Length: 185
Length: 185
DNA sequence: CTAAAAAAAGGACAATTGTCCCAACTAAAA
DNA sequence: TTTTAGTTGGGACAATTGTCCTTTTTTTAG
Image (tube, rainbow over all chains, first blue to last red; front, side, top):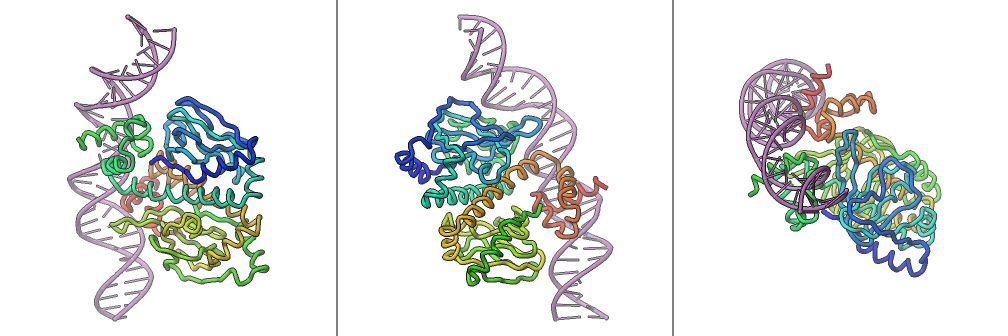
C-alpha cells in the first residue's frame, strides 16, 4: 500500500558522500504540498523519511490518490524525461524529509553512474508494475474485499491515513467506505 | 487511446543496421497471444506494425485492458528490470510485426548506447504518465462522457476494436456500454 | 477555555451499473 | 448447406454506489 524503494535510498546515501552538493535535504510538516500538478519544476525528489500521497485532483477538487509514497521513492522524475508539466500533486501525510536533486545533477548521474542509471530504470519499472494490478483488483472486487486486502497489506492503515484518504485511494466516496466498514464489523 | 512510440521505433531501425542480429522480426496474425501473464521470458518486444492490447485477466477470465499498443511501443521490458514474472498479457488485434530483443542484447544496448538508454527511460516515463490521468478520468466521469472522449481521441475506434474490448478498456460491462451508446444516439 | 473547523458516522433516496436473460445477425467451420 | 460459435443489442430486475443532509465527536486555533 505504501510504496518504498530501500535499495534506491541506500544508493542515494552512498552517492551523497561522493557528491554532497547534489543532494539538498528539505523538511516538511504534515499536510504540506511539495509538488503541485500542472507546473514546471527543475528538480526531483527522493523521500528520506515519512509518508506522502501522490494524487490527481479533478475540477470538482476531488482527489484521486495514485499511491502512497514512503522511504526511497522518487517523484518528479517523470517530468524530467517527458518534458511535460507535473501531472500529479504530492502532499505530505506525516513529517517528511526529502532529498532534492536538480535536473542538471540528475542528468549527470544518469550519464556517469551506471549503477544509479539502472536503479532509476528499475524503480520506474516497479512503479508501472504496481499500478496495473492494483487498479485491476480494485475494479474487480467489492469495496469490502478491498478493505480486507488493505488490512492484510497494512494492518495499521487506519492509524496512518484519514478515512477520506482511504476512500480516495480506493476510488470510492466516503459514504461508501463507511458502509463497507459497517458490514465488516 | 492507442499508445505509440515513433521516436523509439526510429532509433530501433537505426540500431538494427549496426547490430542486425539483435533484432528478430516476428509476425503474428490477429488474436494471437504474444506474451501471457505470470510467465518468465528472456526477451522483450517492440511493435513494428499493428495494434495489440495489454490486459490482465482475473480468475473469472474477465479481461481488464490496460492500454492498446501501437507502433514503437515496448512490452516485456518491465520484467527485465524488476525480475518479476510478466504481469500482463499481450494479444494482437490486427496483424502485427514485432522486433524481438533478448535480455542479453538489451542489457548491452542499455550499457553501451546512451541514446538508447535515454529513450528507454523516456518511454517508461511516458507509460506511467499516461495511465494515471486516464484512470482518473474514467473514474470521475460517466460512461457516456468516456465514450465521447474516445470519439475525440480516435474517431474510428469502433472500426478497430470490438465492443467487448472497448468495454474492458473502459472497465465496464458490455451491457453498460450498450446502454451508454443508446443514450448518445 | 471556548469557538470554529474538520473528521467520522450514518439515514433516506436516486442514479448507475451489473447480472441474467433472450433474440437477431454474422462469420466460421463441418 | 447446415450447424455452431461469436458478436451485437436490449428487457427486467437486483445490487451497488453516489448524493445530500444531519448529528456527533475530535482537533485546531484564537
